[in-house]
Image (cartoon, rainbow, N blue to C red; front, side, top):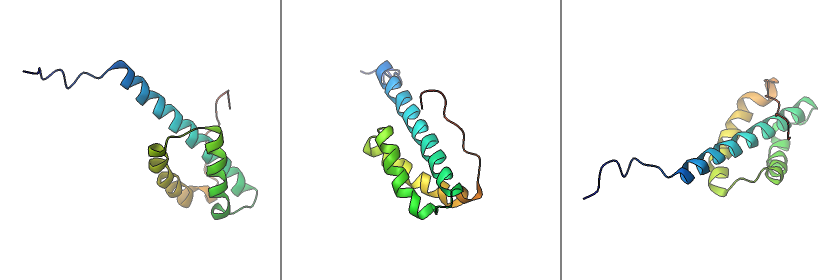
Length: 96
């Protein structure tokens, strides 16, 4: 008979993997938002810049397909509501 605690215990590697996933996703978001906002400030439209910035950011920050599928619609929604307003986009930390 299994103890009910067995299902609640998470392996340390799973925790590390999840933390790394969040870190990568966050880094991608920062880079993407900053680059897209920069393009908009320079006079390019969100529509013409989005795909290019997405691809350029993927070259710098690898995202597995499941995370890409989750993040893409989030960033589309952000771009529709914020990018043209000149909303503040946080700067990246050292190691950009």
